[in-house]
Length: 293
Length: 296
Image (cartoon, rainbow over all chains, first blue to last red; front, side):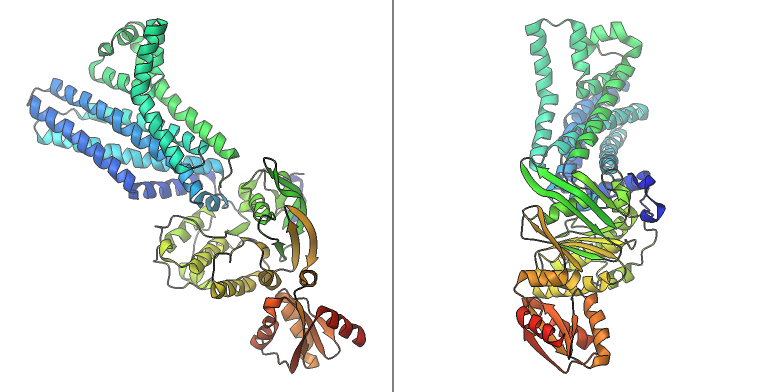
């Protein structure tokens, strides 16, 4: 017999808060906590320092070479983003649920009138805010340095790079939260996050190269394998945006330009969107069945 | 307020709660009593919808498994030890949980005063003592004035003084029409706060008894024979019943079964209520029974 079929006198009116309200409350709490965390500060400083270094060197080296100089700077920044942002997002996401579970905080939180989906979405939203703040700070400071050094800056390109970096950060945050939902201990979750970062940044490229040589993969498969790595999807999209070409990526890039020219941005976008949505959905489903202790 | 039917919870091959059924009416208090591993915490976590389980649990008529969020909005929960963001200030924690509990306005001073930690709003949680943390957890639990309090061995991490103070505070709160479900392995707490006791052993319910029988079953208790003027006896009986004792009238006074560690509690309660006691004596349960028979 459901509550709805019970005599009305037996059902006590309950005033649980709405889903959006709970998500925003939890997100705000998460954002505040993340921005105060020492690890987050260190990541932000590292991102800032590397980004400023690249900007300064590029600007100093190119003088007033104009757009090509800025393009070179942007390419340098893409590599910095590829290194720092996934590591930051993966480890942040990985400790989000597992850390709270280990400290016993999840138990107390879930004993309140909140659903598990609200907790996952609240954490995701809050941590996304913190990552966006970090990326905006890093790339914003780089733009200022470039402007100060007299190098050509193109705010639109910088904004676009920041937007793509945010998408990459969200995809890695989503993967990190999936790891966190699966892991029992925060240390295991963060360790797995670092391992995944290594795999996505270094091992996947080498694996695809080795697989292509060993299995004689057709160039089409090579392109789709590359596209399936969110870091590569980000890189291709960013380079495509600067140069309207991804020829620098070799045969796969040439093939993609020839075959999918106009639809390429959609393909990159779909890849990154899938990496944001699918791991987050999986994290929510797994978290629903997991004990909070 | 709570209805549990055939609750079974297993962790792999280990059965933490086996076919538990119980009900708790509005304003009633029930203790889950047993040693460590008896299944008390498991039952509480199932009531909160934190663990999946077999059977059905309804809180305020709402199925915990299907409508957990609404069911939990009727519950104020106090854990064994408050574990939350230590860097939060007390007022921030109260505000956060007030939002999660859909409480529009909170009078912070009154909230903290109510649980005996006035002027602590600006402190960070990590700066609070164990007893203060438990009082903060209780303040959070009471936000929105929920009709049911669920307590999981709330005094386990406290010293003797902290324990006595918290139990006295809970005693005052439970007498306000609120239902109370709590886990404890301390007989003094059970006799102070509960009206009924579900005795658990290795995940199984071995008995559900009124607190007076619980004391008798423990076997370690005594019976306090209070000699009192006749007019004050009914008032004294009502007062002691309100505090979980099971007094009965006896020719020249009242017989109150008390556990070994609670012999003076009825005397203190009566003194606080300004009810005079002419004399008293401690009897064994057997002697008390004989005394009752003689007067009958």
